[in-house]
Length: 276
Ligand code: PXL
Image (tube, rainbow, N blue to C red):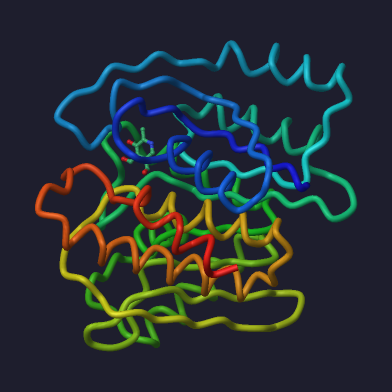
C-alpha cells in the first residue's frame, strides 16, 4: 500500500484540509499520514476563528519518524499557516521527498475568487511561490496562479488568457502544473494542466454551478494525489478528481440543509470509490 504524508491544518469544523484529505485518501486505499500545522476552531472564512500554531511540533514529530526509518511515496502540502512553516517544508521535502519515484505535490492554498485568504499577505504569497518550485506537481486555482505570476486576475477568462497563465505557471518549475477553476466556455468549468517533460496538455470541463463552495480545492487535490498513488496516470487522476468534485457540488446543491461552509463530500465517497 502506498503511503502519503499530508501537511496542512486541522480545521476542527469546516470540511477542509485534513478533515477532507484523511477520509478521501483512505477511501482510495492509500495510507494517509498527517502532519498538522495548526489547529483551528473552524476555517478562516468564518467571521472569526481560534488558532493554535503547531510549528514547534514539526521537528520533533518528523525527527521521530526519521529515527523509525519511515518513508513516504508522496508528500502533499496544503494550507500552511506561516512563512516559517513554508521554510520547514523545504527541509521536509529534502528529508522525505527525494528519491526514486517519490512525488512532492503542492497545493499552494492561499487565495480564491480574486483575493488572498484573510490570514495571508504578499510576503506569504512570495514564499508559497518558492515552495512551488520545489514540487513535482502543483495545483493552483486561477487566483493563486495570478498572484504567483504577477498576472491580473480575470474572472471572465477565455482560452487565450488561460493558456498564457498556464505557460507562466509552468515556468515556476514543477514538472506538472494543473490550473483549477478554468472555464473555457459558457456554463462550463474545470481544469487545464501541462506536463513539461512529455509536452502534454490535459483539458477537462464539467457543467458549472453558479455558487461558491469552500473546500472544493482540497477535495480536488486529495483525490488527484490519492488516484496517482493508486496507480493512475496524472491525466486520469485529474479527470476523476474533477468529476468527483463536480458531482459533490451537484449533490450538495440539492441538499436544502447544506452547511454554508463546505460540501457534502461524505455523501459522495461511495461514488468516488465506484469510479475505480
Ligand atoms: O480550504 C482551504 C483552507 C484550508 N484551511 C484553512 C482555511 C482554508 C480556506 O479558507 O481557512 C484554515
